[in-house]
Image (cartoon, rainbow, N blue to C red; front, side, top):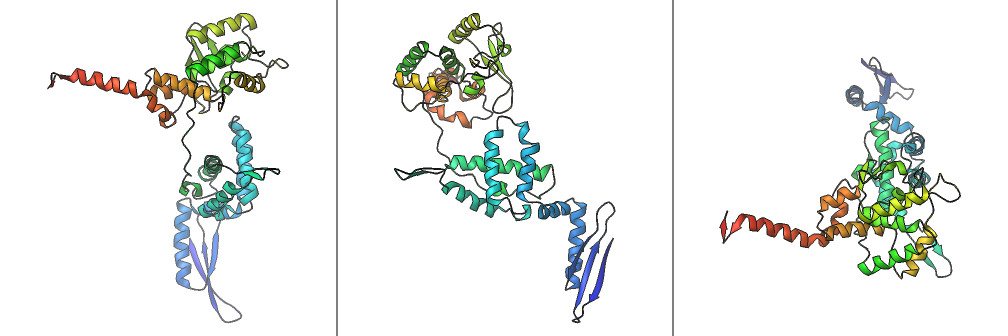
Length: 363
């Protein structure tokens, strides 16, 4: 039910107070100078209430971005333990910059302006040299992604906003992913130095990384219950994309792990910390040491994963097969290895042509 009440002020001016009452919803009212405006408001408000849009708009005016992000960090982020530390840092940055704005005022333009500040903000400085460091486009995209997911929850689950303003913001272009991988000589030197390292954990860890393409966190958090020597597989339950992945355990890596089990037992973590067996070992210091001794430059532990993918490509694996081994949902991340499988692709095309053509005739 809707009503319009005509009112006359002390100054003689007439105003119109529109009021909308629908069963099951709180009454809504607004005042206008023209009766036609009051009628339009009634029509749009009744439609919005019936479609479930009106009270979302009301919530967006009452709630601030800070409230939304605080609730998200309290209720949603704990479900994503691997993302919790860095996404907490990212969301707190948004709170500091634009947290005081109401959700209704958090527009695409406001977020874009804040992103520009994010990119130009100095995150470290060397006073002696005067050098400064700013965030990359890739990092800015991660900050936007964290904010966007929080706003999606506010939109879809809480009904605090009508849409997600981040959805209209274009991603910043990112540089192509690293393609650094070990040459045959580098691989030989690295494995030999790892084998002679004082850190006995390092050799089996590096062998696993090269053989399987697993991430460092996946390897260090491995427990013996995940290793199946009979089936020759390792099962990863907690992965970056939150899906279970089964990794083949073959050849040299299989033998290395069997030897490791004979010496260190088959309970708990494969590579526990020497002081606290419930925590994984920290390999940062010995890793940097072996890189220096092996004379390998511009190389990170994660590049062992790139090395595994590159070796797969060079040995005839398709991009789809590489993606499956590494646990990527799409082929986008493995396209950087496409040039390494050109010989394999050419051989596939050649076999196809030989099968359908014979002496210039279609068979």
